[in-house]
Image: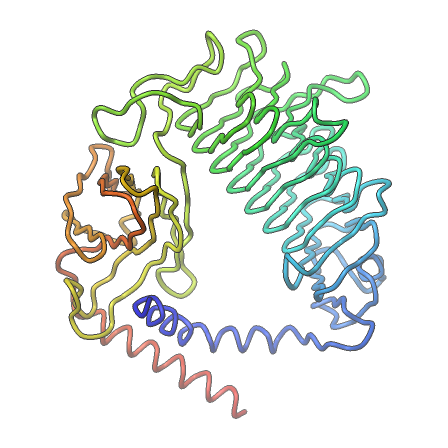
Amino acid sequence: MNRRLLCVLSLLALLSCSLHARFNSLGVKSSVGYRVHNLNTRLNYTSIQEAIDAPETLNGHTIFVQEGTYNENVVLGKSYLTLIGENKSSTVIVGSGKGVAVTLKANNTQIKAFTVQNGSCGIEMSPWTAGHIIQGNIILNNDYGVSGHYDCANVSICDNMITSNNVAGIEMLFSHSVIRNNLIFNNGKGEFLQYSSGILIESGVFDRTIYCVENTVYGNTIKNHRVGIEAAQYSEENLFVHNNFVNNTKQVSASASQWNNSAVENYWSDYGGIDPNNDGIGDIAYKIDDVVQDEHPLMGMFSEFNVSIQLGKSENVAVISNSTVSDLVFCIWLTSPYKGLQPGQSFVEFSATGENGSVGFCRLMIPRTVLNSSTYLVLVDYDPINATELSVSNSTHVYLYFTYAHSTHEVIVTIPESSLLIVPLFTMATVLAVIACKRKRTR
């Protein structure tokens, strides 16, 4: 864990100056009763809706909400408006139980870092609107978690936890949108259990046919539902890729007569196939029904981690594994040589945990902007192991596959010989950042 601490301290040194300047520029000052702040006008308010409706609040403004519970039904009625909570676990919007807790009524609105609960719908996008971003929220104890109605388009629903909603986690009636990296679990309860699903793709509202087309559903975990995805007849050309379908009574409700979508490289917890060529992809298709199937099911769950490789730049590292993978970071080793790591050596590190006595595997996708080499060194608890570079590797990404005996391991992937030039450059950047920050503070 000392290695990670060194990585974190180095990154903090580089980030501290920019963060200090950023928080100073926000002009947010706590005052009793005035916990909602327009960051553009520097005006403060007692409620979220008051801040939105204020005549000084214009299209494109950002409203910052301090921790606390806000008992109100919120309507974002101005375009390009951004609503940001201080902490997603402790900045809570509680609807009245009647109506929608948060309505995205105008185009291009954003809501980030809130808990949203106690509505007929947690977050709903109004008819014929577009460009919404719903990111990093906890959405629970509503009838529907998130819903888009009447031809909404170009929506991004990412990095949310959507759970314990009565009917469905996400109700899809929108198109040309992305649902990415959400944890959707345990939706559907009580009298609504027979209708419950993780994602419900509707076909119409009030007898009007609504088409749900050309959406990408990527990297989500959809777990513990009656139906993982309930697909209606008019859902077409949607792509379901790299999702984890775990312990749903029926993973996907679809038949050849109504399914005109693609399911590719997903993990299915009830898949019983094998992987004789050891690439992390099952060699037997997963059948959704007698005609519809995933031709390339994953042998382990899919995880994706966003790692910072330098100030202002990050990349995604993807893992397919039958281990529980956590704490994935990109680091640069700065101290003296230690168990195969040299000063200046960059590496990706993560924890992998599984049942003792079983065999674990990892299939890694690492951008070459993170680690660029023709050869790679994989260490499990600092011991080198054999790793295969898969034939799907290309000019932008490397794919590695390796196995190990299960317990809890620290896994490191690095380049055998890294240039030591990065040490003085990295150290110089750190020193310059600290000096610049100190100068700003003394002004």
